[in-house]
Image (cartoon, rainbow over all chains, first blue to last red; front, side, top):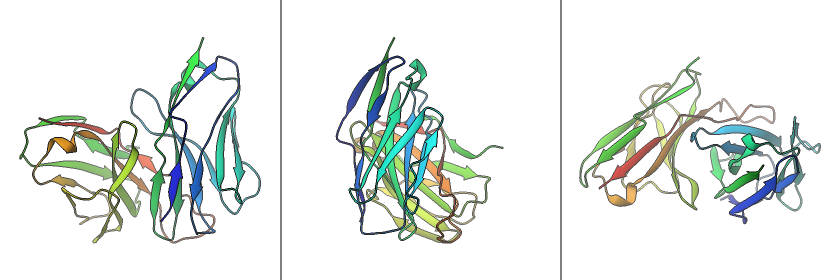
Length: 114
Length: 118
């Protein structure tokens, strides 16, 4: 069974600064996907970024990028030029076709200081 | 372009009552799932389905039933509500037409249901 660990329950960042959210996972599978989802106060789950395990290149989406370390089973999210609208809860998630389950971490609450 | 439609958005139940949370998707996704979200616990998988007629238990299935008679619909039934089932519930769907390295596994979520059992 796979597990996803987000050890930091809360983080804070100054507007326009950079922040990194940590995530580790455990699996015996070699093919899988990793995701970061954002949940603003509206409760809607929004996909931020996706990383395929077979790709060595780190995924990037505008101000969002990941540091994927497959051997260390680490998948951190970097948010550059933080904006007030980035304030939300962020979830790291893992998917493998071996059991078709999407497993989430416990989430981290990010606040952005103006 | 509705995506995943989840109803109701809010519900208050009395202990022992039953109810069904509805979930429908119009993206022809085979994979559908139900999660509950509790403070400090993240999203925990209740039940999931990889296609019509096929369901399986997730991490926290007790007290919940599901069925999948069509590709589009995946209702979640609470047979006898308990205060411990007070939570926010999410339905999600994604493509899972066979495991390949290039498949798009992004999950699409409903808006969530805030359920309170008193």
